[in-house]
Length: 244
Image (cartoon, rainbow, N blue to C red; front, top):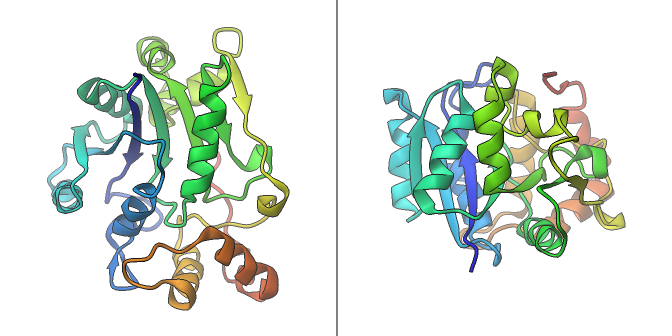
């Protein structure tokens, strides 16, 4: 059986919102909610928090241990090396990439993307804004072989920082595909990731409305809330995605 490992990149040194992954959200660190949600995904064999060697990221390791998930430490800027090392550490055959700034990641979508990947002969499949999803549900799945090939061949700094960029830039090498958003999740203009303070304000508002301790928010309830109260989306409508 192939081991499916979800590797979550996380560090406290965010340039736009430092310490965001540990920022309190509904009484717990934001990263705790992400881990709680990923544990609901039935296709994942293991979850690994990929953080840095820096002492400032020791609390991330402590948090991973508190939640009973694996962790791996690697370079701060070379995130691709972090992923490669984490994948080797757990013997992953398939790697699921999630970023720690998505505290409303949908375990149902994660499972659907993984199943789609396993049912086809691709090196890489992604659910992202380009396939109709909004930012914050981004889920990428690739073979360990594809990840390791990118790790061996990628030399430029952007490809080392943005883990799957080398795959995207070389469709002549890798078999790439997008997982299309189902109609009920097709909101590419929504922004539910956390890069800036106003992003966090929106997420905090959603959690204050919907979260109950010990019960991860059903993402369909998030959709219902935002479709019925679209004014909430104005909280971070001005925030622009960082361009590679």
